[in-house]
Image (cartoon, rainbow, N blue to C red):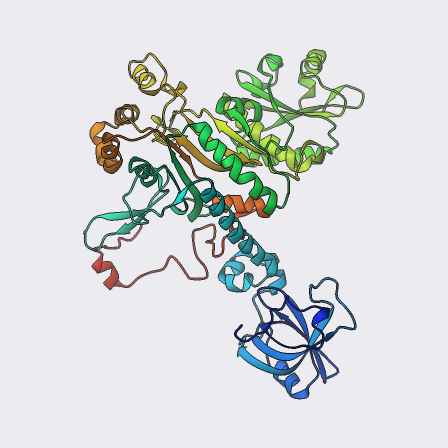
Amino acid sequence: MQNRTHTCNDLRLSDAGKEVRLSGWMENVREVGGNLAFVVLRDFYGTTQLVIEDEKLLQIVAGLNKESVISVTGVVRERDNKNPKMATGDIEVVPSQVEVLGKCRYNALPFQINRSREADESLRLKYRYLDLRNPEVKKQIIMRSQVVAALRSAMIDEGFLEITTPILTASSPEGARDYLVPARKHPGKFYALPQAPQQFKQLLMASGFDRYFQIAPCFRDEDARGDRSPGEFYQLDMEMAFASQEDVFAVLERVLPPIFAKYGTYHRASEAPFQRIPYLEAMETYGSDKPDLRIDLRVQDVTELMDGCGFGPFEGQRVKAVKVTDFTGTRKQIDKLCADVEVISGNKVYWFKVDEKGEIAGGIAKFLQERKEKVISELNLTPNTLVGLTAGKLLAAQKTAGVLIKQLGLICDNHIDREKYEFCWIVDFPMYEIGEESGELEFCHNPFSMPNGGLEILRKAHSDEVDPLTITAFQYDLVCNGVELSSGAVRNHDPEIMVEAFSLVRLGEEDVKAKFPAMYNAFCYGAPPHAGIAPGVDRMIMLLAGVDTIREVIPFPMNKNAQDLMMDAPSTVEQKQLDELHIALVPVE
């Protein structure tokens, strides 16, 4: 190996007496008495202690800043004060030669390398190349590489063919904002970076390929969240011809559990088959379409039970309850819990509890005294039980109860099994919904999904025999520990059904032909039934690593404002570049 015979993690007591050459970064230097120095040398693999006993070499080392890169030649010897925390802690190397390979020209670092995770995030992102020198940060990226390799191997073993699809493509209504790329040779026209390879993978099925996958880069101009990176992300994109929903489930139920069990922070993962939960049931039982099944709490409808109790916020509303047995929290903790849920959901949480004597107390208890026996009986309440209550229109009451369950899972160790990965499928999503901004009928999930009931159910919706909002689709989400890993669907491969589905959202046949010309025409030449899914790789690694933010598992992430602080992107460009692209910048008022 160039500049070294061993890595900084190789040497053991059996190597004592050998002459070796090591190269790496000076992590720490400690001088003793002016004629002796201890240096910790770090490379990608680990650390080794050097003992500088030669005066000339000591002058070289003393003149260097920490994080300088050096190469040393020396003899391995047994260490007097062994360090069991180091893999190489039984030995040290006494250099006879030190060569400076790369000086660190700054006396002060922006943060201590081994404590970089304690630094401000903006500093970490600006100096990401220093942040990645921290072994604890680096190991997430190493694991990412290992997991991607394992996913690729498993998919190939399942008979899938890896095919890459275009990055420059046409703008398509996938549900998020496109990143647009001006076309120099076609003034006034734009490419778009793909939000997903959706159309291309369906076209591969129409082309006669049977099983496709790729670790696909996807681009969406979205705001950041803890589990979503702005700009770009990666997904395990897959599609199968002549396949049903169950065929897709079977593949991922074979591929994912071994990987989660091997690489995950927790070494237990759900076994096949994963639990299947219809969307409406998930919302009613868990208050969420991405339930964390490690938490044993459930939502109960108490609308009738609370009717007429005299508590204003319940009047004329749907009321949901979450009961927590053996609750030991204080009033202060309950108040914080309610405040946290309100911040997240935008809706209030109300509460009462059953005390040690079996009496209803606290919160809204005074409104329930006249019916306390009925409340205790119908909810099967026992002493030391907390009951959280949410109210509002159905969906608001459900979602707030779901947030309450998630927050309770954070503080109630007796109601969650943290040390496992619990998967489930959410199935039977609504095909359509009323858009929050438009107030009109829109696709709920993927517009290319097959409706449950096919062409017939769509025609009935057109003739007002069926409410479009009651139509479900062969759409499904894979959820793990309350995190949505992926969405997928059985695809709509019939042009007639496609036109009928789009017409319900005010897009006619000519619109479909114009927006999706390749797919529409390809399906007119005969396409097989096909289905697919695309688990998010970044979210998967985040779950496996047990970290709270997705930026920890991306080598060079953007910040929450979609800025790359290290490369100073986005940035201004020269006027010449804009002129070539026929772009004029207009000041924003």
